[in-house]
Image (cartoon, rainbow, N blue to C red; front, side):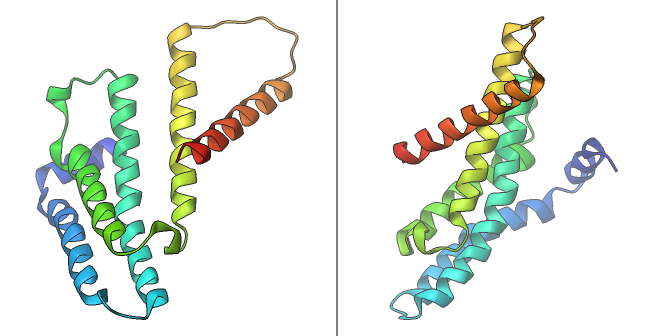
Length: 166
């Protein structure tokens, strides 16, 4: 099954996916009510971690897919699939806002890994977009390993700047 076939299948029956993304913020709100006043922060941080991963993995995929489709495939906004391209992002934002109101992200196990992964994806897409736009063809004697090291150093610099920014 290709990604296109999966998207076509979901488009034919969007309700399971729509219900999933509608329920995630509701679960965050209910968990917030249940955890309010509880002294067991460690337990609730793990519950929130499951919820964060359940919403962030598809949300990050949707953001990445949107960037790819709009920048590289030049898809029109009028052709965007609301259920698969926008609902995961809205659900992710709403769920993360509800979670942040109850517990700091620093207490959620693995949350730093998600932000690092998101930074890496955005850096890679930014570099790919830059290379795509300049149509650079270079005949050079620089070894590929030096180019690869430069790329990794650029990613590290972006990660460092991102951590200082937020």
